[in-house]
Every structure is written in C-alpha cells, then in structure tokens.
Length: 445
Image (cartoon, rainbow, N blue to C red; front, side):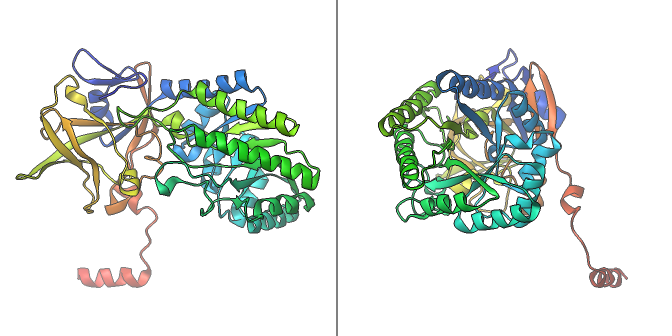
C-alpha cells in the first residue's frame, strides 16, 4: 500500500483524502465514486509550470485534457496558468463553456471533422496539430471559407518506440498518428503548409507514447526533432518557432513503480534542445509539453462498495464491487494493474488474497487480480488508487450502468464536479418510433 498527495489514515482507521473521510464521502455521495485530490492536482500543475519557467523560460505547459476533463478541471487549469490540450469538438466545447480562453488551446486529433474545424476556427483556437496531409488540405479549405488563418504544428512520427503497452505507443512509424520522417511525408507537409495563405506554420509536434519510465526515449525524440528542424531550415529557409514534445510521463500505479523526478526530466530535454541548437546553430524554439496522466493520475481514487464474495474452492476468492470496466476500462484495454486500500479499515493487516471483480457481464471485468487485503465482507469500502487519468474519461454505460459522480476534495471540503448519472439520464436520448409505440400499446391490451 502507498499513500499519495493528501491521503492519510485518520484516528478512526479510515482513509482520508483532502481532509475528507472516505467513509463519510461514500455515505454522502454513494459509490462508485471518483475522488480527486485537488491539492495534489494543483501541486502537480505548479511543479510543471515553475520547473519549465526556471529551466527554459520560453516554454508552455499544456494540460492534456483527454486524461480527465470537466468544466471544473478547465477552471483549475486556467487558474494554474497552464494551456490546454484538446482532442475533439466535445473537449473544446467543455473548455469553452468553462470560460477557458480558446487562444490557449492546442487542438489534436487524427480525424478532425469539417464541423469541428469550423467550430475551433470560430472560437479562435490557438494551435491546430495537423496529423496528415489530407487534414492539412481540409483545414486550409475550411479556413479559406471562414476567412480565418489557422496556426499549425505538424505532428511527426520520430520513429522511436517507447517501452510501454503497444496500444499506447505512438511515436513509431507504424502508428495511426502523425507523419513519417523516413518516408518524407513530414517534410512534404511542412512545404505544403508554407504555401498556404490561410495556414500559419509555426512548429512541430511529437508524442512517443504513454506511461513511460525511461528518460532515454525522450532524449532521442529531442535529437530527432531538432535534426529535422535543421533539415527544414536547409530545405525551406524557415526557422521552426515551436517544438512540442507531447506527454507520456509515467506515474506510480504500483508500490514498486519508480517514475523519474520531474526536474530530472526537464533538465534532460532542456540540455538536449540546447545542445542540438548549438550543434546546428539554430535559434532556440519555444518548447511545449503536454502532461496529463502525471498531473491527475495519482490524484484520483475510485471508491467502491463490496458486494458478493464468491469462493472457487482451491482456486480463487472473487470479491465483487459495485463498479468495474464501466468506470475503469484500462484493465480490459491494457491489463492495467492497481493497488487498493480497504477504506473503512485502512489500518487492518492483510489476511487473504482475493481478486476484485466488476459487475459487468464480461468475464474480463476484473479490476485487480490476486491482491492481499484484510478480510472483507459485504458493505466494506474499497479504494483503488491512481485512477485520476483515463478513468472518468473512458467511463461508459455498458449494461446501462449509470456513470459515477466525481468530487474534488480539498481542506476538508468536498465539491461535486460531475453529478452521478441516473437511470433517466441513460434513457434521455432514446427514441421509440411511433410504429413501435403502437405495438407496445397493442401488446399492453
């Protein structure tokens, strides 16, 4: 077991987060419940902001909204002085409703629709990260029709494979994201963008993957990207103004995980950028990064209520909780692993090995295989740690389960930032055609 942020075990033996007793949170808001440690989120935002400001003043930290995005989170990001990485019209709209300035949004996505592009242009979104030649042509067409100019970063595949799950590797050549260097597509996109009157080419973007613990791939990415910046200058005469290195920084899911220190990471990439700029006699570009998981991941905890306990003699004890793959899809997608605490008896010693099962009608709906916990009974509260990133974002209504509420906790106060869904919410957009309504009425007779 490990505790992060403002977590502690209080005098009652309960897990406490942000000065709030999780047992009381369960009583007030129900379970499953996403609990976000606001203090830790703000500390993480400040650490990125201040470290980059100190070591590379011409920099911009953009929070990657796909990790966790609500209107309240947008407000927090704005208060902390970060920009915002958005990946869809829905994320742009969420930020817009929250009052986040569009000029500080960086718009990603490998298949932006014409409507999304028009919406982003109308709002004045600050940067478009162009993912393909066809998108560049589409963006230019929409910009011409709208009488707007789009500021563009070209997304490049640096050809680097980070050692992580293959589903979240994105920097290698065989990826749906970005334009290749070896095949000449990235350079072709730059040359094309420079000829378009409604496109303002300012820089390059790359992202090598997610949940990365090894610093070496980031250093290699800087070398590749700075070499490409030199190639662009030689072949076009243009100096690239911005270099966006994306995100992917790993966090602690298990007690043995060992993420690198933020200062170590920043020093490494800053040193690499400076060295390559000196080698090629290049002006230093503005440096952008897009952390998401490392800002909110460890700040999130999901609280469940224990239900059915089932023994398979000689094989395994299954403990079912009132959530699962509908609020944590990562276990099914990536075979992700987690630690957990029995929140209502956090001081109790481990007595048994159990597997935590979700309640969806899927055999693969297992949250944690073979974890040692205190003896459990129906009604106990299980807190699964490090669930702040890609949990609420990926939550779903499989089996028509309502999605959980989300609360921010800080200084003994809990505030709901997403209301718990109801059954009525689930059917809100359902429509019964008149011909079926008639059939139902006849059957009722």
